[in-house]
Image 1 (cartoon, one colour):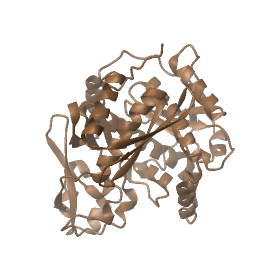
Image 2 (cartoon, rainbow, N blue to C red):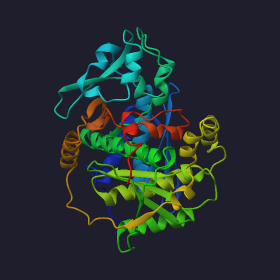
Image 3 (tube, rainbow, N blue to C red):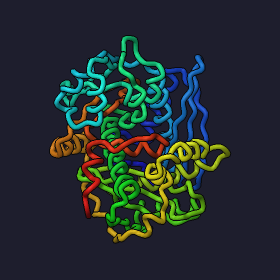
Image 4 (tube, helix red, strand yellow):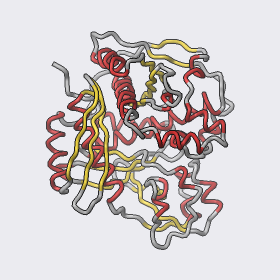
Length: 407
């Protein structure tokens, strides 16, 4: 028997599958499904509506959990791309004065166009109290192609920093918020990792995670992942100061120069769960890169960054750079007590506050029996990881603060 319980889910897998299938049926979305892998692998779901709107989603891990995860992600992308959002216009100077945004990467951009207006969404705390507004152009990719009526801000520079990071769907609202918070922490840690080791080339030592024995579920998954990829897997602890641990999983092979960029990452209050996410995501992205043309976007991104060698080195993610660095092996800590999603969410939210970070939540959709889509923004966290999409980005204030730090 293999456990279907996952640390950050509120519902049994079968119940979550039933709810998402009912939600897709209510929205009259057709489902096309594909599975690739062995014991672990990648599920891909394509959704289409009668109006011709489409989306895709991928799921990772064991087959059944991957199939459920892919359904949720496909719906997340469908709603994110096609759902009309509630937005209002803010003058840039008013936005710049909001206390929570004082150390955000937005500030120089707002200062350059103080009288211009941006479409924004309102963000609230866990108890529903308003915290700040944030520009829609940074949370909805391609938004700049169709800005809201009345928006006068020149978005051409900011669009390089736009992503759907911090958007997450869950079978419940609290589940979605927890996923979004952990994703925000993960992307911030990835950004600092690329800055430290590839952009600044600092001599920071690495922390390699020792592989658990196959008497553990994680050890078995790790081994099956290596068998699936026909290569050893290395896992780095790249955690920052926050309570959630972040890990980076790498295929330790130079078979393809672009394979370094096809990594897996995971963040969670439970380090074992975070490593599980990183390892299974590595399998997912590696398998998804195999069909003809799958690497075209990555190759294009590398060409776009050729005029910027330090940025290009981040995208290329040369494993030799890491292997030449000093490092040591660390064991995963003993698993802590199981905590409910609500307990994890409250603890992580308070931990961000203790570190001077205020997470804002915007609920975008609430559907069948509580299925929820949210966007979470934690002002001040680093967005430099977008270099991996071929974006010509510069470090934000948090990234700049790390440029002179020594181990």
